[in-house]
Structure formats: C-alpha cells, structure tokens
Length: 143
Image 1 (cartoon, rainbow, N blue to C red):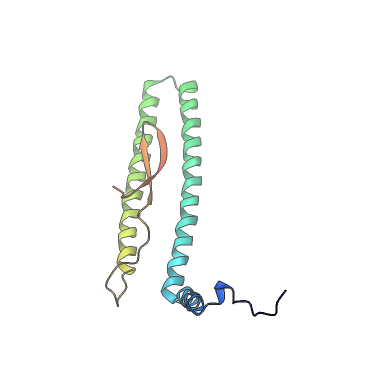
Image 2 (image 1 turned 90 degrees about the vertical axis):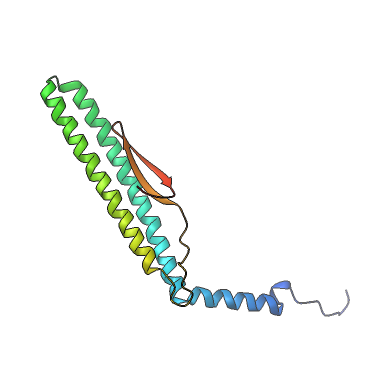
C-alpha cells in the first residue's frame, strides 16, 4: 500500500457543494416551505375525502339493502328517490364550491416577481355520483 493521497470522494467536489448549498437555500425559502405545507395539506385532505367517500359508499349500500328489504310502498320509494336527488345536488354544490376555492388559491399562489403561478400539479380530486354509487376519481378539472 502506497502513501499516495487519495482523491476526495465526488460529494466533496466544489460543484457538488454548491449544488447542496443551493438545495439547502431552496428548502429554507419561505415560499417553498409554504408550498410544501400546502402539498401536505392537500394530501391529507385527499385521504380524508377518500375515507368520507368510502363511508358514503357503505351508507349508500346499506340504504339500498334497507329500501329493497323494507320499503314496499311506492310513495315511500319516491320519497327516498327525492332524498337521493337532494344528496346529489349537495355533492354538486360542494364540487362547485371546491372548484371556486381552488381557483382562488391558484390566484394567491402567483409569484409577484416572476408573474407566473407556482406549479402545484395537475391532478385534482373529484367525486362523481351516478346510479346511487359514489366514485372518487383523479381528474384534470372539476365541473
């Protein structure tokens, strides 16, 4: 074994150190921290929506079983269909409200120095209701 000095590992090269310093600076940027917090919040909201959709789905299935088993009157069946339509309307209103909030949030995320919106990804969560079943879908736009 000779006493030659070994070259420094690649991670200690000056250009790598500059890159690491830039990454540290980017991670301490207030806008970046805020964006990361918003992404985490969106992720937790998507998980919460998924749980709520599963709960709605199970309640819908239970409701359908009860209707088929116990409701013999056409008048009661019509009332139930009316309630289901009301639920659909509530969900549509919720989607429109969420869409409006998303648009306002995008307006707030405009960077004043660059004049461009901060990229937040193009996948959004949407809920659709058809024939008594609730679906959670990834979509590029809401209603």
